[in-house]
Image 1 (cartoon, rainbow, N blue to C red):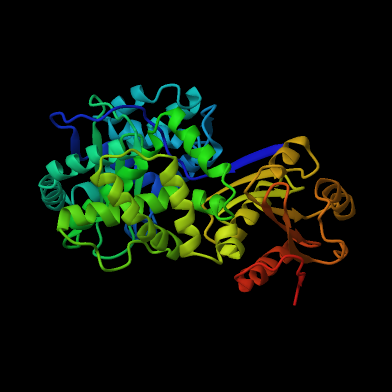
Image 2: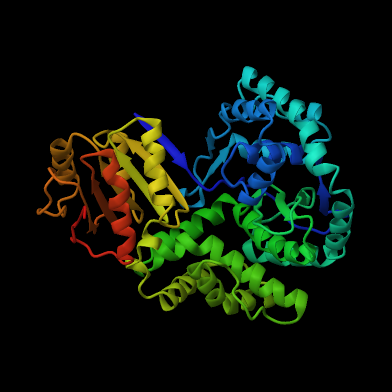
Length: 479
Protein backbone atom coordinates (compact mmCIF):
# COMPACT_ATOMS: atom_id res chain seq x y z
CA UNK A 1 0.00 0.00 0.00
CA UNK A 2 1.32 3.39 -0.92
CA UNK A 3 -0.37 6.63 0.04
CA UNK A 4 1.31 9.82 -1.16
CA UNK A 5 0.27 13.39 -0.64
CA UNK A 6 0.59 16.40 -2.91
CA UNK A 7 -0.88 19.31 -1.07
CA UNK A 8 -0.68 22.94 -0.65
CA UNK A 9 1.10 23.34 2.70
CA UNK A 10 0.16 25.81 5.39
CA UNK A 11 1.14 25.86 9.09
CA UNK A 12 -1.56 26.98 11.53
CA UNK A 13 -0.79 29.13 14.52
CA UNK A 14 -3.20 29.93 17.30
CA UNK A 15 -3.67 33.31 18.95
CA UNK A 16 -5.36 36.98 19.54
CA UNK A 17 -4.42 40.34 18.08
CA UNK A 18 -3.30 43.41 19.94
CA UNK A 19 -0.92 46.11 18.91
CA UNK A 20 2.59 45.79 20.26
CA UNK A 21 5.95 47.32 19.56
CA UNK A 22 7.60 45.68 16.53
CA UNK A 23 4.56 43.46 16.06
CA UNK A 24 5.15 43.52 12.30
CA UNK A 25 8.75 42.98 11.31
CA UNK A 26 10.19 43.50 7.82
CA UNK A 27 13.55 41.83 7.33
CA UNK A 28 15.96 39.85 5.21
CA UNK A 29 17.65 36.79 6.65
CA UNK A 30 20.81 35.24 5.26
CA UNK A 31 19.94 31.79 6.59
CA UNK A 32 16.50 31.88 4.99
CA UNK A 33 18.13 33.14 1.80
CA UNK A 34 20.58 30.24 1.80
CA UNK A 35 17.79 27.71 2.25
CA UNK A 36 15.69 29.24 -0.54
CA UNK A 37 18.81 29.29 -2.75
CA UNK A 38 19.53 25.56 -2.49
CA UNK A 39 15.83 24.63 -2.48
CA UNK A 40 15.31 26.60 -5.70
CA UNK A 41 18.43 25.17 -7.32
CA UNK A 42 17.12 21.70 -6.40
CA UNK A 43 13.75 22.45 -8.04
CA UNK A 44 11.72 22.15 -4.86
CA UNK A 45 7.94 22.79 -5.11
CA UNK A 46 7.07 26.48 -5.06
CA UNK A 47 10.39 27.63 -6.53
CA UNK A 48 10.33 30.63 -8.85
CA UNK A 49 11.42 29.62 -12.40
CA UNK A 50 13.17 32.97 -12.84
CA UNK A 51 15.30 32.30 -9.76
CA UNK A 52 16.10 28.80 -11.00
CA UNK A 53 17.27 30.26 -14.29
CA UNK A 54 19.38 32.89 -12.55
CA UNK A 55 21.13 30.29 -10.38
CA UNK A 56 21.70 28.00 -13.33
CA UNK A 57 23.22 30.81 -15.40
CA UNK A 58 25.41 31.94 -12.51
CA UNK A 59 26.80 28.61 -11.32
CA UNK A 60 25.22 25.88 -13.41
CA UNK A 61 28.56 24.47 -14.55
CA UNK A 62 29.99 24.21 -11.04
CA UNK A 63 30.19 20.46 -10.37
CA UNK A 64 30.60 20.97 -6.62
CA UNK A 65 27.38 22.98 -6.46
CA UNK A 66 25.56 20.46 -8.65
CA UNK A 67 26.55 17.77 -6.16
CA UNK A 68 25.11 19.91 -3.34
CA UNK A 69 21.76 20.13 -5.14
CA UNK A 70 21.74 16.36 -5.59
CA UNK A 71 22.51 15.84 -1.91
CA UNK A 72 19.76 18.26 -0.89
CA UNK A 73 17.25 16.55 -3.19
CA UNK A 74 18.02 13.22 -1.52
CA UNK A 75 16.81 14.51 1.88
CA UNK A 76 13.15 13.76 2.56
CA UNK A 77 11.77 17.19 3.45
CA UNK A 78 8.18 16.46 2.38
CA UNK A 79 7.20 14.11 5.20
CA UNK A 80 3.98 15.48 6.66
CA UNK A 81 2.56 15.83 10.13
CA UNK A 82 -1.22 15.38 10.19
CA UNK A 83 -3.06 17.52 12.72
CA UNK A 84 -5.94 15.41 13.95
CA UNK A 85 -9.53 16.70 14.20
CA UNK A 86 -9.00 19.57 11.74
CA UNK A 87 -11.18 19.51 8.58
CA UNK A 88 -9.54 17.81 5.59
CA UNK A 89 -10.56 20.71 3.34
CA UNK A 90 -8.40 22.97 5.49
CA UNK A 91 -5.31 20.91 4.60
CA UNK A 92 -4.29 19.97 8.15
CA UNK A 93 -0.78 18.91 7.18
CA UNK A 94 2.57 20.45 8.00
CA UNK A 95 5.60 19.26 6.08
CA UNK A 96 9.16 19.06 7.34
CA UNK A 97 10.03 21.71 4.76
CA UNK A 98 7.43 24.05 6.28
CA UNK A 99 9.16 23.73 9.64
CA UNK A 100 12.56 24.29 8.05
CA UNK A 101 11.29 27.51 6.39
CA UNK A 102 10.04 28.79 9.73
CA UNK A 103 13.24 27.87 11.57
CA UNK A 104 15.43 29.49 8.93
CA UNK A 105 13.40 32.72 9.03
CA UNK A 106 14.06 32.96 12.78
CA UNK A 107 17.70 31.84 12.80
CA UNK A 108 20.68 34.11 13.35
CA UNK A 109 23.20 31.71 11.80
CA UNK A 110 23.39 28.26 10.28
CA UNK A 111 24.58 26.89 13.62
CA UNK A 112 21.52 28.46 15.24
CA UNK A 113 19.41 26.89 12.48
CA UNK A 114 21.01 23.53 13.24
CA UNK A 115 20.02 23.81 16.90
CA UNK A 116 16.46 24.93 16.12
CA UNK A 117 15.85 22.04 13.71
CA UNK A 118 17.05 19.12 15.83
CA UNK A 119 14.39 16.43 15.60
CA UNK A 120 12.87 17.67 12.35
CA UNK A 121 14.80 15.03 10.41
CA UNK A 122 16.53 11.74 11.24
CA UNK A 123 19.94 12.52 12.80
CA UNK A 124 21.96 11.56 9.73
CA UNK A 125 19.76 13.66 7.40
CA UNK A 126 19.86 16.59 9.81
CA UNK A 127 23.66 16.44 9.86
CA UNK A 128 23.67 16.27 6.06
CA UNK A 129 21.33 19.27 5.71
CA UNK A 130 23.45 21.44 8.01
CA UNK A 131 26.62 20.44 6.14
CA UNK A 132 24.98 21.35 2.83
CA UNK A 133 23.83 24.73 4.21
CA UNK A 134 27.38 25.57 5.32
CA UNK A 135 28.74 24.74 1.85
CA UNK A 136 25.96 26.62 0.02
CA UNK A 137 26.37 29.80 2.09
CA UNK A 138 29.49 31.08 0.20
CA UNK A 139 27.67 30.62 -3.12
CA UNK A 140 24.66 32.53 -1.83
CA UNK A 141 26.78 35.35 -0.44
CA UNK A 142 28.71 35.74 -3.67
CA UNK A 143 25.86 35.55 -6.17
CA UNK A 144 22.97 37.13 -4.23
CA UNK A 145 23.66 38.61 -0.80
CA UNK A 146 26.71 40.71 -1.70
CA UNK A 147 25.21 42.01 -4.94
CA UNK A 148 21.94 43.25 -3.44
CA UNK A 149 23.06 45.15 -0.33
CA UNK A 150 21.72 48.54 -1.46
CA UNK A 151 18.46 47.18 -2.84
CA UNK A 152 17.75 45.20 0.32
CA UNK A 153 18.11 48.26 2.53
CA UNK A 154 15.96 50.39 0.22
CA UNK A 155 13.18 47.80 0.04
CA UNK A 156 13.06 47.28 3.78
CA UNK A 157 12.71 51.04 4.30
CA UNK A 158 10.05 51.30 1.61
CA UNK A 159 7.89 48.61 3.23
CA UNK A 160 8.61 49.85 6.74
CA UNK A 161 6.78 53.08 5.88
CA UNK A 162 3.57 51.06 5.54
CA UNK A 163 3.94 49.04 8.75
CA UNK A 164 1.48 51.12 10.88
CA UNK A 165 -1.19 50.73 8.19
CA UNK A 166 -0.48 47.02 7.76
CA UNK A 167 -0.85 46.51 11.51
CA UNK A 168 -4.21 48.29 11.53
CA UNK A 169 -5.42 46.12 8.67
CA UNK A 170 -4.06 43.00 10.38
CA UNK A 171 -6.12 43.71 13.49
CA UNK A 172 -9.27 44.30 11.45
CA UNK A 173 -8.85 41.06 9.49
CA UNK A 174 -8.09 39.22 12.73
CA UNK A 175 -11.49 40.23 14.12
CA UNK A 176 -13.28 39.44 10.85
CA UNK A 177 -11.79 35.93 10.67
CA UNK A 178 -12.09 35.26 14.41
CA UNK A 179 -8.48 34.13 14.51
CA UNK A 180 -7.63 35.34 18.04
CA UNK A 181 -4.02 36.03 17.05
CA UNK A 182 -1.84 36.58 20.11
CA UNK A 183 -0.06 39.87 20.71
CA UNK A 184 2.99 37.83 21.68
CA UNK A 185 3.30 36.31 18.19
CA UNK A 186 4.74 38.79 15.67
CA UNK A 187 3.87 38.81 11.98
CA UNK A 188 7.05 38.74 9.93
CA UNK A 189 7.44 39.82 6.31
CA UNK A 190 10.61 37.94 5.43
CA UNK A 191 12.20 38.94 2.13
CA UNK A 192 14.75 37.40 -0.17
CA UNK A 193 16.02 39.01 -3.38
CA UNK A 194 16.25 37.59 -6.89
CA UNK A 195 18.93 39.63 -8.71
CA UNK A 196 16.85 40.19 -11.86
CA UNK A 197 14.80 42.96 -13.44
CA UNK A 198 12.00 40.73 -14.75
CA UNK A 199 10.57 37.31 -14.04
CA UNK A 200 8.29 35.52 -11.62
CA UNK A 201 8.40 35.66 -7.84
CA UNK A 202 6.79 33.70 -5.01
CA UNK A 203 5.07 34.47 -1.72
CA UNK A 204 4.41 31.66 0.72
CA UNK A 205 2.84 31.90 4.19
CA UNK A 206 4.66 29.75 6.76
CA UNK A 207 3.47 30.01 10.35
CA UNK A 208 3.76 33.65 11.34
CA UNK A 209 6.05 34.41 8.38
CA UNK A 210 5.26 35.64 4.91
CA UNK A 211 8.31 34.51 2.93
CA UNK A 212 8.39 36.71 -0.12
CA UNK A 213 10.84 36.85 -3.02
CA UNK A 214 11.24 39.97 -5.14
CA UNK A 215 13.18 41.24 -8.17
CA UNK A 216 15.97 43.39 -6.74
CA UNK A 217 16.60 45.24 -10.02
CA UNK A 218 12.96 46.21 -10.58
CA UNK A 219 11.54 49.52 -9.45
CA UNK A 220 8.47 49.82 -7.22
CA UNK A 221 8.77 46.29 -5.87
CA UNK A 222 7.86 47.62 -2.44
CA UNK A 223 4.38 48.69 -3.57
CA UNK A 224 3.69 45.27 -5.06
CA UNK A 225 4.89 43.48 -1.94
CA UNK A 226 2.46 45.46 0.23
CA UNK A 227 -0.44 44.10 -1.80
CA UNK A 228 0.97 40.58 -1.67
CA UNK A 229 1.54 40.86 2.07
CA UNK A 230 -2.09 41.73 2.81
CA UNK A 231 -3.35 38.93 0.57
CA UNK A 232 -1.07 36.35 2.19
CA UNK A 233 -1.78 37.75 5.65
CA UNK A 234 -5.39 36.68 5.12
CA UNK A 235 -4.21 33.12 4.42
CA UNK A 236 -2.19 33.09 7.63
CA UNK A 237 -5.08 34.37 9.73
CA UNK A 238 -7.54 32.02 8.03
CA UNK A 239 -5.29 29.07 8.90
CA UNK A 240 -4.97 30.41 12.45
CA UNK A 241 -8.69 30.16 13.13
CA UNK A 242 -9.46 28.10 16.28
CA UNK A 243 -10.44 24.48 15.76
CA UNK A 244 -14.07 25.07 16.72
CA UNK A 245 -14.52 27.83 14.13
CA UNK A 246 -12.79 25.74 11.45
CA UNK A 247 -15.16 22.88 12.19
CA UNK A 248 -18.17 25.22 12.07
CA UNK A 249 -17.13 26.62 8.69
CA UNK A 250 -16.55 23.09 7.40
CA UNK A 251 -20.04 22.06 8.56
CA UNK A 252 -21.71 25.13 7.03
CA UNK A 253 -20.18 24.29 3.65
CA UNK A 254 -20.49 20.50 3.67
CA UNK A 255 -24.10 20.35 4.90
CA UNK A 256 -25.36 22.93 2.41
CA UNK A 257 -27.85 21.66 -0.17
CA UNK A 258 -26.68 24.26 -2.68
CA UNK A 259 -25.04 22.46 -5.66
CA UNK A 260 -22.24 25.01 -5.71
CA UNK A 261 -21.30 24.55 -2.04
CA UNK A 262 -18.39 22.14 -2.61
CA UNK A 263 -16.80 24.31 -5.28
CA UNK A 264 -17.35 27.48 -3.26
CA UNK A 265 -15.56 25.75 -0.39
CA UNK A 266 -12.66 24.74 -2.65
CA UNK A 267 -12.12 28.37 -3.69
CA UNK A 268 -13.11 30.07 -0.47
CA UNK A 269 -9.63 30.51 1.06
CA UNK A 270 -8.12 32.04 -2.08
CA UNK A 271 -11.26 33.96 -3.04
CA UNK A 272 -11.55 35.44 0.44
CA UNK A 273 -7.86 36.43 0.48
CA UNK A 274 -8.41 38.19 -2.85
CA UNK A 275 -11.53 40.00 -1.62
CA UNK A 276 -9.74 41.09 1.56
CA UNK A 277 -6.24 41.80 0.24
CA UNK A 278 -6.75 42.90 -3.35
CA UNK A 279 -10.16 44.47 -2.76
CA UNK A 280 -10.89 45.82 0.71
CA UNK A 281 -7.29 46.39 1.87
CA UNK A 282 -6.28 48.00 -1.43
CA UNK A 283 -9.20 50.40 -1.02
CA UNK A 284 -8.15 51.18 2.57
CA UNK A 285 -4.58 51.93 1.54
CA UNK A 286 -5.27 53.80 -1.70
CA UNK A 287 -8.73 55.27 -1.24
CA UNK A 288 -10.14 53.47 -4.27
CA UNK A 289 -10.68 49.96 -5.61
CA UNK A 290 -8.19 48.48 -8.05
CA UNK A 291 -9.99 48.69 -11.42
CA UNK A 292 -7.92 45.86 -12.92
CA UNK A 293 -7.85 42.12 -12.40
CA UNK A 294 -7.24 41.08 -8.81
CA UNK A 295 -5.97 37.57 -9.52
CA UNK A 296 -4.63 35.81 -12.61
CA UNK A 297 -7.10 32.91 -12.43
CA UNK A 298 -10.65 33.75 -13.55
CA UNK A 299 -12.43 31.81 -10.81
CA UNK A 300 -10.44 33.35 -7.97
CA UNK A 301 -10.57 36.81 -9.54
CA UNK A 302 -14.32 36.58 -10.10
CA UNK A 303 -15.06 35.03 -6.71
CA UNK A 304 -12.94 37.63 -4.91
CA UNK A 305 -14.80 40.46 -6.61
CA UNK A 306 -18.16 38.86 -5.80
CA UNK A 307 -17.19 38.46 -2.14
CA UNK A 308 -15.80 42.00 -1.79
CA UNK A 309 -19.09 43.85 -0.95
CA UNK A 310 -19.94 41.20 1.66
CA UNK A 311 -16.44 41.40 3.14
CA UNK A 312 -16.63 45.20 3.26
CA UNK A 313 -19.93 45.08 5.14
CA UNK A 314 -18.51 42.75 7.77
CA UNK A 315 -15.33 44.81 8.11
CA UNK A 316 -17.21 48.07 8.54
CA UNK A 317 -19.43 46.60 11.27
CA UNK A 318 -16.60 44.64 12.99
CA UNK A 319 -18.48 41.38 12.48
CA UNK A 320 -16.81 37.98 12.58
CA UNK A 321 -17.39 35.48 9.81
CA UNK A 322 -20.50 33.40 10.56
CA UNK A 323 -23.00 30.97 9.04
CA UNK A 324 -24.85 33.75 7.23
CA UNK A 325 -21.59 34.82 5.57
CA UNK A 326 -20.85 31.28 4.36
CA UNK A 327 -24.39 30.77 3.04
CA UNK A 328 -24.18 34.03 1.08
CA UNK A 329 -20.67 33.15 -0.16
CA UNK A 330 -22.00 29.90 -1.64
CA UNK A 331 -24.80 31.72 -3.44
CA UNK A 332 -22.36 34.31 -4.80
CA UNK A 333 -20.12 31.59 -6.26
CA UNK A 334 -23.05 30.07 -8.12
CA UNK A 335 -24.06 33.47 -9.46
CA UNK A 336 -20.54 34.16 -10.68
CA UNK A 337 -19.94 30.74 -12.29
CA UNK A 338 -23.13 28.92 -13.23
CA UNK A 339 -21.21 26.39 -15.40
CA UNK A 340 -18.56 25.64 -12.79
CA UNK A 341 -19.99 22.25 -11.80
CA UNK A 342 -18.99 20.79 -15.18
CA UNK A 343 -15.77 22.77 -15.80
CA UNK A 344 -12.89 20.28 -15.87
CA UNK A 345 -10.35 22.85 -14.75
CA UNK A 346 -12.43 23.24 -11.59
CA UNK A 347 -13.31 19.59 -11.13
CA UNK A 348 -9.62 18.66 -11.25
CA UNK A 349 -8.74 21.30 -8.67
CA UNK A 350 -9.05 18.95 -5.67
CA UNK A 351 -8.41 15.39 -6.68
CA UNK A 352 -7.94 11.83 -5.50
CA UNK A 353 -5.81 9.82 -7.94
CA UNK A 354 -5.83 6.01 -7.95
CA UNK A 355 -3.87 3.37 -9.85
CA UNK A 356 -2.45 -0.13 -9.46
CA UNK A 357 1.17 0.96 -9.71
CA UNK A 358 3.57 1.63 -6.87
CA UNK A 359 6.32 2.79 -9.24
CA UNK A 360 7.40 6.25 -8.00
CA UNK A 361 8.31 7.40 -11.51
CA UNK A 362 4.94 6.43 -12.93
CA UNK A 363 3.14 8.04 -9.98
CA UNK A 364 4.96 11.29 -10.78
CA UNK A 365 3.78 10.95 -14.38
CA UNK A 366 0.15 10.72 -13.24
CA UNK A 367 0.48 13.83 -11.08
CA UNK A 368 2.24 15.72 -13.87
CA UNK A 369 -0.41 14.66 -16.37
CA UNK A 370 -3.02 16.54 -14.36
CA UNK A 371 -0.88 19.40 -13.11
CA UNK A 372 0.36 20.31 -16.61
CA UNK A 373 -3.17 20.49 -18.04
CA UNK A 374 -5.40 21.62 -15.19
CA UNK A 375 -5.16 23.90 -12.19
CA UNK A 376 -4.56 21.31 -9.46
CA UNK A 377 -4.68 22.75 -5.95
CA UNK A 378 -4.38 19.55 -3.96
CA UNK A 379 -4.29 15.84 -4.68
CA UNK A 380 -3.88 12.52 -2.93
CA UNK A 381 -2.58 9.33 -4.51
CA UNK A 382 -3.61 5.82 -3.50
CA UNK A 383 -2.61 2.39 -4.77
CA UNK A 384 -3.57 -0.31 -5.35
CA UNK A 385 -7.14 0.49 -6.34
CA UNK A 386 -8.55 -2.67 -4.76
CA UNK A 387 -7.39 -1.91 -1.22
CA UNK A 388 -9.42 -0.79 1.77
CA UNK A 389 -7.39 2.41 2.04
CA UNK A 390 -8.27 3.26 -1.58
CA UNK A 391 -11.90 2.37 -0.97
CA UNK A 392 -11.92 4.90 1.88
CA UNK A 393 -10.62 7.59 -0.47
CA UNK A 394 -13.14 6.57 -3.13
CA UNK A 395 -15.95 7.14 -0.63
CA UNK A 396 -14.91 10.73 0.14
CA UNK A 397 -17.62 13.26 -0.62
CA UNK A 398 -17.32 16.26 -2.92
CA UNK A 399 -13.92 15.36 -4.33
CA UNK A 400 -13.16 14.36 -7.91
CA UNK A 401 -11.61 10.92 -8.37
CA UNK A 402 -9.25 10.08 -11.25
CA UNK A 403 -8.87 6.31 -11.57
CA UNK A 404 -6.00 5.26 -13.84
CA UNK A 405 -6.38 1.58 -14.69
CA UNK A 406 -2.84 0.72 -15.76
CA UNK A 407 -3.04 -3.08 -15.30
CA UNK A 408 -5.44 -5.82 -14.19
CA UNK A 409 -8.13 -4.15 -16.29
CA UNK A 410 -10.86 -6.80 -16.08
CA UNK A 411 -10.40 -7.23 -12.33
CA UNK A 412 -10.40 -3.49 -11.59
CA UNK A 413 -13.49 -2.81 -13.70
CA UNK A 414 -15.30 -5.52 -11.74
CA UNK A 415 -14.11 -3.95 -8.47
CA UNK A 416 -15.32 -0.51 -9.56
CA UNK A 417 -18.71 -1.90 -10.56
CA UNK A 418 -19.19 -3.04 -6.98
CA UNK A 419 -18.06 0.34 -5.61
CA UNK A 420 -20.11 2.40 -8.09
CA UNK A 421 -23.41 0.95 -9.31
CA UNK A 422 -23.70 3.90 -11.73
CA UNK A 423 -20.46 2.97 -13.52
CA UNK A 424 -21.16 3.16 -17.29
CA UNK A 425 -21.95 -0.25 -18.77
CA UNK A 426 -20.52 0.51 -22.21
CA UNK A 427 -16.84 0.57 -21.29
CA UNK A 428 -14.51 -2.04 -22.74
CA UNK A 429 -11.27 -2.61 -20.79
CA UNK A 430 -9.52 -4.04 -23.85
CA UNK A 431 -9.08 -0.53 -25.33
CA UNK A 432 -7.49 2.66 -24.02
CA UNK A 433 -10.05 5.37 -23.23
CA UNK A 434 -11.10 8.05 -20.77
CA UNK A 435 -14.69 8.46 -19.59
CA UNK A 436 -16.58 9.90 -16.63
CA UNK A 437 -19.74 9.64 -14.58
CA UNK A 438 -21.32 11.34 -11.58
CA UNK A 439 -21.65 9.42 -8.33
CA UNK A 440 -24.67 10.76 -6.45
CA UNK A 441 -23.76 8.96 -3.23
CA UNK A 442 -20.50 10.89 -2.83
CA UNK A 443 -21.63 13.87 -4.93
CA UNK A 444 -18.43 13.47 -6.90
CA UNK A 445 -17.23 13.30 -10.48
CA UNK A 446 -15.43 10.05 -11.32
CA UNK A 447 -12.97 10.06 -14.23
CA UNK A 448 -11.66 6.72 -15.49
CA UNK A 449 -8.55 6.53 -17.68
CA UNK A 450 -8.00 3.02 -18.99
CA UNK A 451 -4.39 2.77 -20.21
CA UNK A 452 -3.29 -0.41 -21.92
CA UNK A 453 0.13 1.18 -22.36
CA UNK A 454 1.89 3.77 -20.20
CA UNK A 455 2.28 6.11 -23.17
CA UNK A 456 -1.52 6.20 -23.64
CA UNK A 457 -2.00 8.32 -20.51
CA UNK A 458 -0.73 11.66 -21.85
CA UNK A 459 -2.81 11.73 -25.07
CA UNK A 460 -5.91 10.69 -23.12
CA UNK A 461 -5.34 13.60 -20.74
CA UNK A 462 -4.90 15.89 -23.77
CA UNK A 463 -8.31 14.82 -25.08
CA UNK A 464 -9.88 15.36 -21.67
CA UNK A 465 -8.36 18.84 -21.47
CA UNK A 466 -9.72 19.70 -24.93
CA UNK A 467 -13.28 18.97 -23.74
CA UNK A 468 -13.22 21.96 -21.32
CA UNK A 469 -16.61 20.93 -19.84
CA UNK A 470 -17.26 17.35 -18.83
CA UNK A 471 -19.97 15.25 -20.49
CA UNK A 472 -20.82 12.33 -18.26
CA UNK A 473 -20.85 8.97 -20.06
CA UNK A 474 -18.95 10.23 -23.10
CA UNK A 475 -16.06 7.94 -24.05
CA UNK A 476 -12.89 9.50 -25.46
CA UNK A 477 -10.61 7.06 -27.27
CA UNK A 478 -7.12 7.50 -28.65
CA UNK A 479 -7.15 9.24 -32.02
